[in-house]
Length: 112
Image (cartoon, rainbow, N blue to C red; front, side):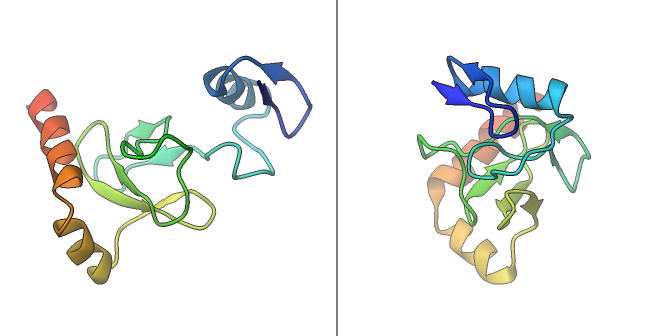
């Protein structure tokens, strides 16, 4: 059971809660551990309206890697769970994680 942190409405799953917050509260919320803000890719400008944290069962946390579902660009979840481009050190760390690079290739292969 998921509960809206703004109005207390209850939902069976996080998708229902997310849709409620986007429609009723225009994407605004106080508890960033419950929901994520709208995510826009800094390369293609597309709105990724769901977390793309492929390797963890939980919602994303600051520092997690996101793969744009449209162009494959890699970004990092910031403290407020918005997306930011990775630092040089983070790029080197990502390069050592073949599962992330594999997901990036999958997205690009689907689009291409």
